Amino acid sequence: MPDRTSREIHLAARPVGWPTEETFALKEEQISAPADGEVLVRNLVMSVDPYMRGRMNDAKSYVPPFAVGEVLDGGAVGVVLESRSDDLAPGDTVLHGMGWRDLALGEASRFRKVDSDVAAPSDYLGVLGLTGFTAYVGLLDIAAMTSGDAVFVSGAAGAVGGMVGQFARLRGASRVIGSAGSAEKVAFLTERLGFDAAFNYHDGPVRDQLRAAAPDGIDVYFDNVGGEHLEAALTALRPHGRVAMCGAVAQYNDTTPPAAPRNLALVIGKRLTVRGFIVGDHSQRMDDFVREVNDWRRDGRLVEEETVVDGLENAPAAFLGLLRGDNMGKMIVRISNGSGG
Ligand code: NDP
Image 1 (cartoon, rainbow, N blue to C red):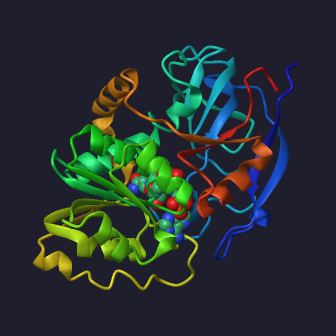
Image 2 (cartoon, rainbow, N blue to C red; image 1 turned 90 degrees about the vertical axis):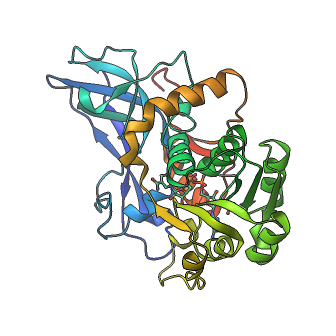
């Protein structure tokens, strides 16, 4: 009989403020054999994402909160071990939502087959997955970026931000500006990702650094951070500028509401459009996204940076590191090499 022992990361307690290692618990479970219509999958890689911090709170949101004492979930790619469905066969590579565990068991319809010859498993979590799609929809549909726009993106050396800057350049932005949290990340943006200018937001007020990087102002702000960054961007935006409100990672661990932006009224006089979005609402754009991004990939025009943490047991550390900014590009946890280990 195959060994169906699976390690899982559970939510041990709801964090108040910053999560810690004590927020998580590593458990071992025996997984049953697949029932009719089900498949059993060995996970290869999983994603850690900032939105997971919100799901650790007991608050109403666009996704339900994680339950205390239960296994966490999130994007993962694995290989089918056993199948009792005609739709999937052992050896198939699949994308699904049951990360944070070695083995995933469920209805075959919860797993989508992906082509492991076209891209590496982690690419389906990053450039071809939620990350790339968020950047694409946010930049092109929500902020309605067009050729000639000057674009500013915060969290620029992270997963979504790095793609936003590159997509903007490839779509003909007149100037691409990014902010990030270290000198190394700033160098990465200008030297490897082709940003025209970048700055470290720890070096001084964002407003002053943005003015120096974009003396003629900006047309689009892609907001991953919120707070002081959003305030600075509202000041820098030209009339009829657009803001895609994607995330507010600077405040996910705050226990009190942010003080900024204090200049929201600029939205009126400048006729700005400020629009929030959740990528999951935009699946009708998936085919366009895959086509265009695959073209860029084929032509070698995209830099696809990853920070890989090895071992499911280190997934909590990877998540905590993500919130601190330890990652360059997409943060991935490698769970297995696929050989059963
Ligand atoms: P990232 O890879 O960008 O990782 C998070 C980054 O946040 C860190 O690397 C860190 O970089 C930065 N950060 C942490 N604290 C601060 C702070 N106080 N100020 C500024 N930056 C900070 O994650 P993702 O690319 O996955 O996500 C980026 C944003 O997009 C998040 O806000 C996320 O919630 C959002 N998102 C929204 C979606 C939607 O549908 N609306 C879908 C997917 C993501 P640094 O070293 O530069 O500080």
